Length: 231
Image (cartoon, rainbow, N blue to C red; front, side, top):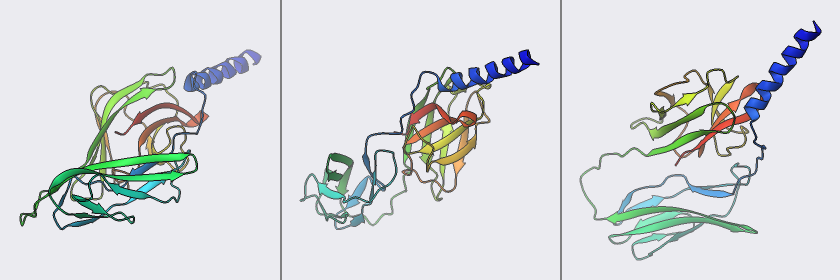
């Protein structure tokens, strides 16, 4: 009986150490400001309301004064409420900045102002991508694409054939988050069911700019085992 208890304890400790690897969990990250609704172009005379969100040093949204600017006010004029107006043709960058105390962060959106057209433009889906990497002794790797599904409010996360994960990794869950070190206020995509090859997830309640990271989490021991930045 004593030998059985010792063996069980060793197995638990082994799983815990494998999940953690050599990482030291630290929830702090760099502050960031994100333009929530970037665009590719604006017509002359057209207005567009930009929106942005400031994320604090644990990746949570926080109220802050957003300072808006245009690299050329003769091409696009933008108010401090984020309302942009196309003035004349050209390519410029609209910036959203937060400057307070020791925080100075900026997010940019480069776009073109074009002549007005009566033709209705085809909608273009925003597509992002990234690579997941392990942070433990378990195998976890692969490339992914995160994209809008046109004519819907849904998004799709797709992995290609390079994806691999150890099938014996205990309690593996996937989260979408703005802090790669924590699942606090993260979106739970559920337990990982595919451990090799191409597969995808569809989210009806996640928008393309809601999250910045994929986070793989060992649920039994509440530790990170992998991550990927959504670029």
